[in-house]
Length: 333
Image 1 (cartoon, rainbow, N blue to C red):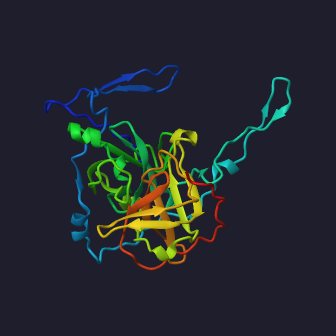
Image 2: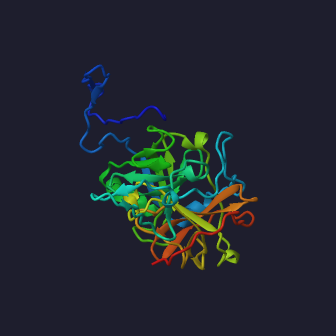
Image 3: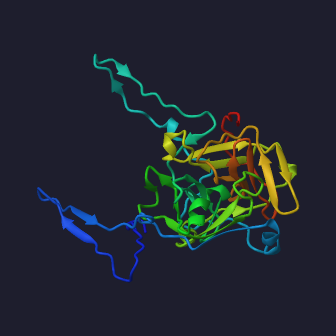
């Protein structure tokens, strides 16, 4: 997948689409142009199959109490709890027309810092694109499963009968850090029937066509306990539009959950006063570390400003802090 970029077409008949390959090399270079016909509605995407919304009682009835909730790290993957942020990178020297030295100015939010790293579990978070023209964030939580926010699903396209969602793990400046072809379209979606409202039910699980988690691993998940209120142990990764136009992931750590609102049907709002979020971070994980900082578990996803909400996952144990110092946190709006 890393060396192959796939392109999907929908045709009206079973005739194979005509792909044209033309040599355009010059001066001894081997260069090729590949022309592929594109259907007006699909734009090379693989269409989804089912996208459903159900009441909370249905999901609760299907919960398997003994399902494994732990994260999975493949043997090849290096563990890294905190990335080196890009605003600490060395910048090249610039000079004015008259020759005096100038240092480039970098503008980053104090709480969220961009990074470039595909180490585990950082690379499990990716950018999501959909057929409604929106983008957001999501996290691998199984071989084929991605957790995100329900409002990330393109319900307008679903209602029209033709929709797609693409998940690109470790997205950075146009493609995955794992390789150009490491991505997957979504075959199926399941979400609470909460309409388009941001609430304690604004979460969804996506099923991928490609089992990316078999190779990359995945985060675990856990329910939230109010005993953890005001503990500065939580982290988030996402793709906000206000930092490099969502082309780079951002990381923040050390924020707390200050209040929760929940009900008996499995939905819970996790409210933070010092987490810093922006459009595009929707669906990104709220997670902490268990088992001596070796087991990252997601407890919720970013839903909206003033609230971070999500599904109550099965509870096992207590989260632990990382060994790194918490980042300086800004105020959430």
